Structure formats: structure tokens, C-alpha cells
Image (cartoon, rainbow, N blue to C red):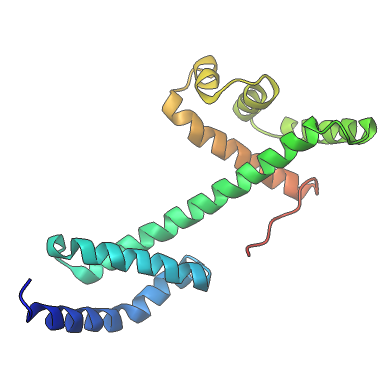
Length: 177
């Protein structure tokens, strides 16, 4: 790169950042991204932009589109962590042999009651996965689903279960840090 392009690139990049600042803040606010996480997402987006800038026709549209996508992925990953946390907490509680038998029985009874409120395909899937110990591929095969779609279905079923568990007070709702 010729020496004259360095300062020109720096100036044009600074100008782009100033131009995009209110728009990126609006995107992050619209997606309710916490400030510290929003800074990380924006930095990741801008770093990717710098690597790909030669191939990008419209920098403003690209940065805003890429940032929106990162926001969606951010919340998808956060939801997945919540579902896995509830999933693990329930399984650990059921497997814990140190809790009194009555408390374990009550937990299992309450969990069975909540499971009964789920749609039948969720009940079947969750039963296969967590009661009978099927792995995702086996559960998909048994229920007649594609192995590639079982993860999304499991996530939806766990989301529904989590919502119901929080509503009836069996699990505390996690607050964002």
C-alpha cells in the first residue's frame, strides 16, 4: 500500500465512523444490546469491515447490516445459554441424590405437570431426550424428523418449558449481568 493511502484511509474511516455513530447507536438500542456488549459487537463489525473493505460497495449499508446480524446472533446465543442453564439445573436437581426424597418427588411431580401443558411433540421430544437418554440424532430418527432440524425443535421446546417453569415459580428468571 502506498504511503499516501494510509492517511487517506484513516481520514475516510474516521469520517465513516462519525457518520455512522447515531445509526449504530440506534441499531444497538433497537435490539436492546447492553452498552458493554454493544461496544464489542460494533468493534467486531468494524474489524470485519476493515478486512473486507476492498470488496464492499456501500460501507454504510454493509456496516449497519452486519451489525444488525450480529445483534440477532447475540440474542440467539443468549437465549440458548438460558435454555441450557435451565435444562442443566433441572437435570442436576433430578440426579442429585442428596436432596430429600420428598423434595425430589415434588420436583418431579411439578415438572411432570408443567410438561403436560406442552404440545405433544415437545413432550415426546423432551421425554426421549431427557427421560430415556436418546441423543439428538436418535430422537430425530424416532420422531421422524431430520437430524438437522431436531436442534431447533429442541431449542423451541426448551424455550416453552423454560417460560412455563418461570411462570409457575419452579425456576427463577435470570437477570442479565
